Length: 281
Ligand SMILES: [Zn+2]
Image 1 (cartoon, rainbow, N blue to C red):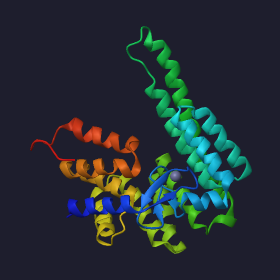
Image 2 (cartoon, rainbow, N blue to C red):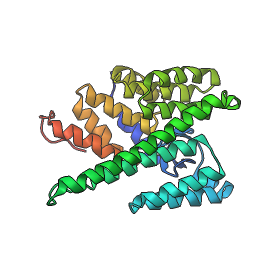
Image 3 (cartoon, rainbow, N blue to C red):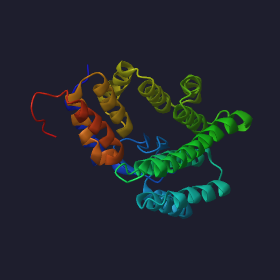
C-alpha cells in the first residue's frame, strides 16, 4: 500500500536535483537520479543542457527552435525542423519524437474548434479533417520506427532502438507487440529501462495495481522518476484514491509541466469524488 507522504518527499527530492535535457525533444526535467526518463517523450535521458550544448550545439539549437515553434503554436515550422534533423541524422529517437510533436499538433488543431461560431459545423469539418491528417502523419512516424527496426538487422541488439520501438508500439496502441519488445529489453542489460517499460505498458493497459507496486519500489529505493510519479498519480486516481492522486499530480506541475498534469487534475476534480472538504495543495 502506497504512502503518499513518501511520494511527496520523492517529488521534493526531484525538484532539488540537477536538470537533465532530452536529446530527442529538448525538454528539461529536474531529477535527483541519472538516468531518468523525459516527461515529454519518455526517452531515457542522462545529460544536462550545458553538456549537450558543448557536445552538439547544432542539435540543441534545432531542438530550441522546435520548442519555440510549439510554444508559439507554429507546429508546421517545428515539424519541418524535425524533418531537417532527421534527413541529416536519421535516428529513431528523433523520428519518434517527431511523432509525439504531430500528436500535439493534431490536438492543437482540434482544440481550435469554436462551437459558438455561426455555421461552425461546416468550418469544423475542415478542422477535424486537418487534425485527422496530422494524427495520421504521427502514426506513420511511429510505424516507420517499428518497420525500420524490423528490416535493419544491424540494430537488433541496440537497447535505445528497441526501447524507441517499444514506445512507438505503445503510441500505436499495439500493446501485444509492445509487450514482446519489452520482453527483449532485460537481455540488453538495463534493469531501469526494462522495469520502466513494464510500468508504461501496465499504465496503458489498465494494470494499476502493478503500476503502484513498481512505483512503491522506486520510492522505497529513492529512485522515483518524474514520469513514474505521474503514472502513480494516474493509478491512484483509477483505484479511486482521488485525494492522494490529486495531491501527487498537483505537486508534479513543477516537475513535468502543467500541460500533461492538468488534464489528470481536471479529470479528478470533474468526478467530484473528494467530499471531505478542501485539500491543502
Ligand atoms: Zn523527450
